[in-house]
Length: 227
Image (cartoon, rainbow, N blue to C red; front, side, top):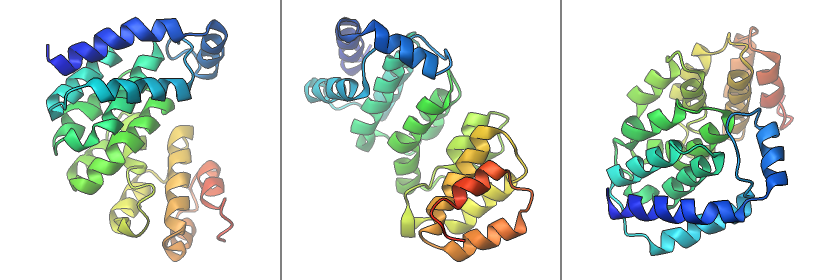
């Protein structure tokens, strides 16, 4: 076991239970539809733990970072999964061009719910697809039978502004335009809303050419008022 992985697992399993609040845990587990048990550590405190831990950790290799995240994913409580995302975000410069395919794809498709999928999106998928163009992988995720890989692909360019690969984004959105699955429709709407900040004409054209688009997607796409 690498030093990085050993310190993370030992320190977190020693510290986190002592920070838990049973009422917070109960509320979080109910809100997250019972996807996993919770210790009851609020997000600001969890992020503080992650930052403090990161200061004492050696710089990991890409594989050490990924294997550590996988080890945290194997633990039961949801806060460990969130901390895996936090550490990936902190050490994202250590992740190589294969990190998404080698590790993030596994994390996205195991113990999956919108919370970890969206955390991984902002921590890993968005920055790494910008640093390492990953068109083939995003198309693979888009066409997967796993809705969470679909969602990650749909959202992978959120926040890109003028760096948005508009043709690729529209290709992915077009592929999913007839889906009524809530988490996919929501992601489509968010992606269109982001695009409207950069090119509202493309968004209006997409909406006009896709009358089958779920009303959830349309509502989210129009929230900025760009009609």
